[in-house]
Length: 226
Image (tube, rainbow, N blue to C red; front, top):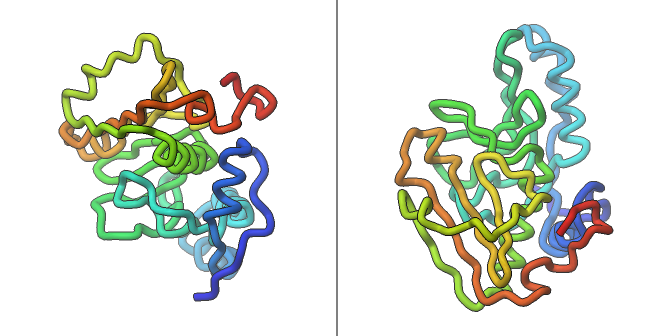
């Protein structure tokens, strides 16, 4: 497997995420989706779905980022494969293979959502950009927090978030980030929902953050109200 430095960070990310991808990401060689187009067409995969996979690969294909804090690190690298679905429910495809043996697949949903599929489809973020933003924010918060506290199961509901605001750039669905006056809270519900296992719900509280720690240089000029 050949590795390459990243010379073209995808557009549409905050400066924090752009810096994260540029500094910590690498590209690996992958096989073009077009090599499999005819094979999938013969198995009744719609051409539009293959087009979506090709567009995803052109934007994200081969991107290898540091492991996520949850989901056993997330995909090893981003690369589309294994389209599945139906004309009535919509179509999914694999976002990238797992780093470890986990009971779910990382998938891109019918609307471009990034999520996991096990007993059921659970979108984690509204887009791949949201997943990458979450990875970047995890890296940033881990570096600057004075304390990191892990909370699991029903105790997650006891975290008082009334005075917090959502971190919009992660485009959270089952997973989301919240920003307070001196802390960031990441709530991960994907495994709990997809596997019907409430005890898997997890929150990480990054506390003791100053203004830089809370925002990491992201402001309204990035297109987000931070």
